[in-house]
Amino acid sequence: MITYLIQDPQGASKEEAPPWADSPAPEIDAYGQLPKLASTFDHVDGLFYFTYAVCIFFFVIITGVLLYSAVAHRRKTWDQKPISNFTHNTPLEVIWTIIPLIIVMVMFAWGFKGALDMTTVPQAAKQNTYKASAKQWAWTFTYPDGTESYSEVWFEVNKPVHVITESQDVLHAFYLPSMRVKRDVVPGRFQSVWFEPTMKGDFHLFCAEYCGKSHSRMYSKVHVVDSATFASQPWNQVPEDDAPIEDRIAYGKQLWKGAGCYACHNITGIENTGPSWKAGPEGSPEMGLFTKNADGEIVGTQREVSENGEVTTITVDEDYIKESIAYPAKKIVWRGRYKVGGMPAANLSDDKLSCLIDFMKSLADN
Image (tube, rainbow, N blue to C red; front, side, top):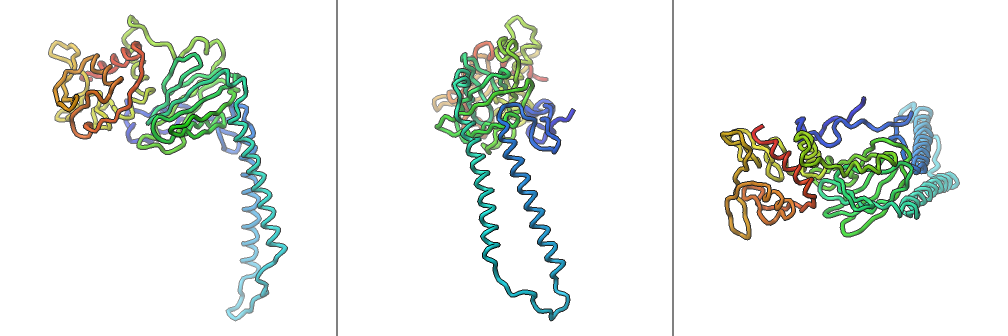
């Protein structure tokens, strides 16, 4: 199976492999172009191949004329006189102006109609409306019933989808190559796009506008499933409190990547935009969130924080973590680059927070 290489130095370790690591490469056509079409927007491919053919045709014609002229009319002696003194040919210039203009206008009309089709939402799609919220550097998806998922989204096959996009910070772009959909996500403005998935499977969603340091890691998986699978809400199945701890830790790790925590908080003990969740090597200032005492019990580490302008030392516990996720500016870690704060608030349900904390605890002295 062809897979994407891990090219991001921030994710060089196995623990911090970027979200697309080990994802199958998209299927392409016989010409090695474009991921396999998985929606009804086939006009995008038609325009692409028309443009492709026009470029090849004129490249061959122009290059051929240039090569022929260079060989057939080359100067054979140093004192050879010019074959012709003509400086221009009006009919020819009109022809090579009018024909390209017609071709470009055809491309424009074709593309404009396609853009209108993509943003003029039919009634069937409006009844299946999602919201895609972008922020540095992750996606949050809200389903028609109000439930949410992070960096993974599920759609029902052969059912039109309307997606309203919003940005919580800078310019992003909602780009689904297999669906032939791309829509800029502009701060302070809602944008709409729709499509109809026609093929079950897993597909790729990228941010296609440079949005900062971890732009290349702003990736999501799109799952297109049948109606029975969709009805089971796979995005909303959180391990219960009495579930095996391994399952809860695995879900917490998935949430760490899916909710975008990985962009600032690594699990390798290396200084990053935000404090590492795992202790660094001996002598490192990174203390992690939890450690093990002499009895092997998992306890919180101590750290200096600034609250209301006063610096105090606190012991990390579950309440502190929950408070920091919901109100990140309330207690800012008072060390080095972390003093500037800037972490966005996140709205996670209690069961998801519990799994995330179990994952944090699993990093204690490992």
